[in-house]
Amino acid sequence: MAVFVRIAGSDTERLGTLCLIRRRKGLDGAEKRLLHALASHAALSLENFRRFSQLERSKRQWVEDIDAISDYIVVHDRAWNIVRTNRSLASHLGVPPVALVGEAMGSLRQIAETGSELPCPFCRDTKRIRENTWRRRRSGYFWCRLRGRRELPTTIRAPFTC
View 1: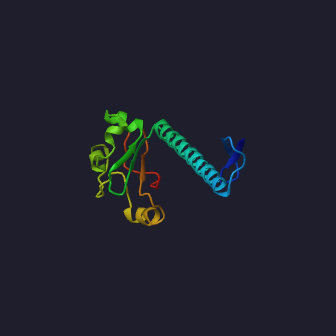
View 2: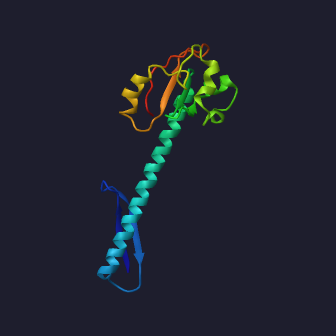
View 3: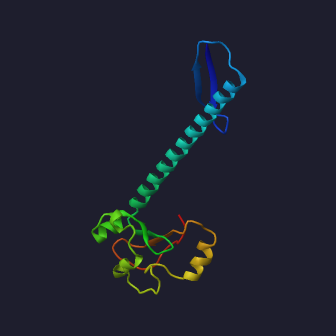
């Protein structure tokens, strides 16, 4: 005898079917509950895999988009440590982008044209940044985009949380 149990996603989308082949006919209540529990766990695993895959694709796309921008871009956290740079900035500094991850933002001070009292030589108006970004956003990352590829002014276009 074959027993089929539908594996459905949270939106009732059909994800697959669980098939049980056995010699004796019929299932008692406990066996039916067990089979449905297995199908439910399978559905949860499949949905989590899909979400994780989508997140990874989005992350790869984001990295490709940032790297395609010719302006220098650096992303830092609230502790003023570099989280990500694009290829343009890393290439200007003569290092791979991953080599800068974890470094203090102050290490980029040599390429800033004007001084800043902040640990990030490119951030300005910290009161506005704190009011507009830290309170509304939770992840605490800031994106500093330096305008021209050849010249390195210290202005940022849009501090925001990733």
